[in-house]
Amino acid sequence: MANEIKDVVIWQGSGAVVELALMSEATSPTGTGTLYTQSSFSALSLSLYRLYRGRMTAVSGYTDLPLTISSVIFNTAQGWSEDSVGYNFRYFFPAAAFVGNAEYIPLLKCTLTDGQVFIPTNPPKIKVKAIEDGGAIAGGGTSTTVTGELLYVATASAALQNTTDEGTLIGGGSGSLNVAANSQTAGDTFIIEASGFYSTDAVVGPYFDWLAKWSTECTLTVRLYLPPSQSSQPWNAKAVFTRRTIGASGTLVGRLSVEAFTPAGPITGCAVTSGNQTSDTTVSAALALRGDWETADSENIITGQQAELYKRRISS
Image 1 (cartoon, rainbow, N blue to C red):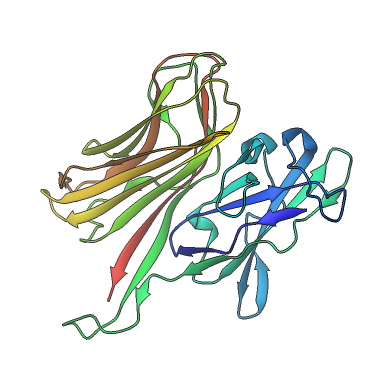
Image 2 (cartoon, one colour):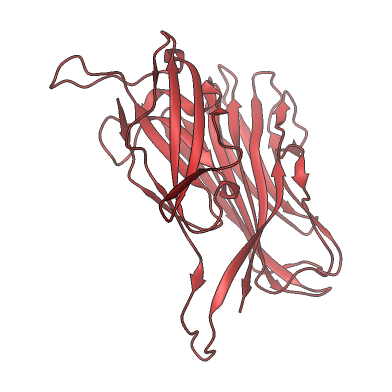
């Protein structure tokens, strides 16, 4: 049995979170089941399908994708608005999973430790809406469309453990995290989306800094206190840099939002630039998402599992 969330609606170029309550069968017609825990499962795999004009096609990279049970299953119920029971499964789909405005259907295959296999029925649909204005712009008489370009996708994980040295949260992958010289126009927006999981010391909870960087010209920092005795809890981060002006004295603004999840609920933080930041577009710029533990501890571990960099541009 599973209680699914309502359909998810996102804008093109955004990621999506799917939350489910995975439960055992009720023992009576009027009863309810109990939420499964990590030890209930021997395997989980996820598939994503694109539904467009009556045709459903598999999304590349999301066909029976094996999931790490401890990264997506909570051992205690997480609060949500659907009911008082809560959810115990959470997965973040990066923006790169969605191509164009369409509906997407995630299917989760669950294998229990006793060998039973089930797929939650009536899964939620993820509806992706195109960011465009098909009508006239006041005073312009033309339409505008936002185009997107995937610049980089991580194909490996990155981890920081037992160190206070700043390090990357984006693993090796395909594409480039560098923005070429003289390639930007005013209004260009660059988005880093990343997610992973973390564990902390059994006694002392540490602070951890997420840092989104545009070369050496702009750094956004979110510091969160992570409670002790956390094991493979999920986190996600999104950094957005928007180009204001171009040239050697060009400017940009940015923001960074971070969520770190615990059994008691999410811990969140946000950082924004204080006005325009000077940023030279006549030279290349390296984008990064990095991290830094306040204290070195062998039990303090954070892993960046997924990461993408993509660009949006308005065209007339």
